[in-house]
Amino acid sequence: MLITSGQISVAISSTVVATFTFLLFLSGYVLQQQTVHSLQAAIHPKITPPQIPTTNPVLAKHFGQPPGHSFYDKYLASNRPKGGWAKAAYVQLARRHVEVCGAIMGFARLEKEESMAQRIIMYPREWDMKPEEGKKRNPRVETSRRLLRKAAKDYKVMLQPIDSTTQAAGSPLTAEEKFPLTNLLSPHHYNRIIFLQPPGLILDSTPLDLLFTLPMETPMLGLFAPGPDNERGQPSILLIQPSMQAYADITSSLPEGAYPDSEFLQLVHIESAPTDAEFHTRLLAEISQLDANSVADFNATQFLSTTAYVHISDPEPEYDIPRQEFIGAMPSGKQARSAWESVYARFRDARMNICGLDLQPIEKALDGGRGKQTVEELN
Image: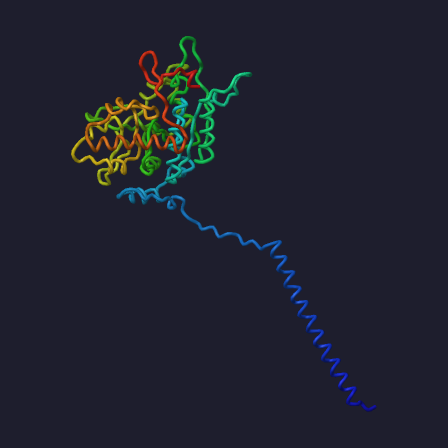
């Protein structure tokens, strides 16, 4: 059978058409699959787990403080509290509404400086109680509750309500009698706690953190800033190693049914707060003793940059002190006066910026005292 040239041309044409048709189908199929994969990737994107770097939480702290503080940085990098930072805590006892903001200001500073220690605020349980039917909650209570919620949310503060001591017959109990310092012995699951006597201002938390790592030979140690004559004063910093045994031993030494702060503090071993002359740093300063520092070599800038905690005793920084009275309480030296004014200004600014509170107006009692409300008014 002979194949003509026409048949050959038709066969070749058919082959070419079939080949191009197949190639067109194949390219369309590939394009379709790419489109399907693109749609699948858009609808169900492939999630790659983030690479979390492993870092030492202590080394992650940025100190950036005055010259010499690299010593504390290196020390805290290799020395931790017994049981770790989860077993170390700053504890504030807010017995009055006016003390709540000050406690939160301190914890805000700890959060800013990335202190690894835990934070606890103890406050009267009665602040959580609902008001009687038909009565509104005390505005002071509402403010304190708002601030406590802010502390828990913004500064990782644990809130611990505490019960008052038994009300004895006779005159009403003071806030100190209802909520004594013995409550500081109750957090048994911590190996060490630090209590800072209010009101005060934390200027640098690093030397305070160092106290969690130092050895203690007694379950309670109080630190005070010595006066011009090196007189012993009430402790402004309390270091406590809480335990059930310590609580039982100490409370059994106090009057039955009462735990007065004065007698409690007599059981505390009290020492002068150390000052590191080599690094020109001081752990604690008393605002009332600045006048003793009115010497030629006192420098306000250095004082403010190398002091850990300033206890502000009188005049009270939460109140709007009349200008004449405030000036009369100032130290005489120019540099000491500059430091004095800066401490009060910082306290006032932090009170507004952190708590949203102005200074309290002065309330003169009949005996001429300042802000001496009863416990019922305070609660």
